[in-house]
Amino acid sequence: MAQVHPINAFNDNYIWAICEPHSQGTWVVDPGQSAPVMQFLREKNRQLKGILVTHHHWDHTDGIAEIRESFPDIPVYGPKDSPYLGITHPLVKGDSITIAGAQYNIIETPGHTLDHICYVNEARAFTGDTLFSGGCGRLFEGSAEQMWQSLSKLSELPDTCEVYCTHEYTLANLAFANAVEPDNTALKTYTVWATQQRAQNRPTLPSTIGKELAVNPFLRANSNAILRHLPESLATPTETTSQVFAKLRLWKDQF
Ligand SMILES: [Zn+2]
Image 1 (tube, helix red, strand yellow):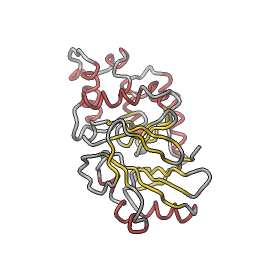
Image 2: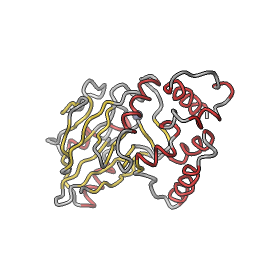
Image 3: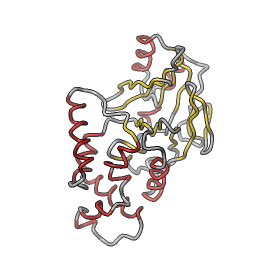
Image 4: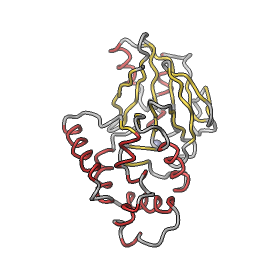
């Protein structure tokens, strides 16, 4: 199976490098910067075969033009109808592509942006800014209902499926998660582990779907435990899970 390596970019972005096991072939996900990607390829003696884009934000796409000066013929996969215009191979839901010997299905996950897609299979999910460890992306373009539906699609993946998101936001997310569910023991254990990882400057990622279902309040909006700790200003009656999700998202924005 392909190995996946984090390439650090900006303050807290990871550009994931998917490395073919028996060749130099390498794919990168959301290269917001070119220099760290070029350095990775040089140091590891790897050959870039293509780029995957989850959504149009600059910190996911700004490195692409410069990378393509060195690799003009590689495909740039990404969402169809994206405001980012550098995509050479547009994708829609139901499409699948083969990357480093594994097939990835495309699911549309609007919420953070309207063009957001995730690349998923049973073993791995590249979730961009939709699902983070312990949290989810802000709602810049989509509605809470859309984001809840998007996260619900991801939560249907196997528990063992690894989650590769773009940001190392885990500790900040867990501070919020602990305010939402102070009695969640899985969350407490995970917070201790994540704190140790970051103290040693190690990534907390990849996570897994099973772990996120246990600790991430945004995947747990259908749990009664979530409602108990909502601040008074948000503790009005709710009818649907997506309404609970909307309140959580609002609370996190103010947290
Ligand atoms: Zn974004």
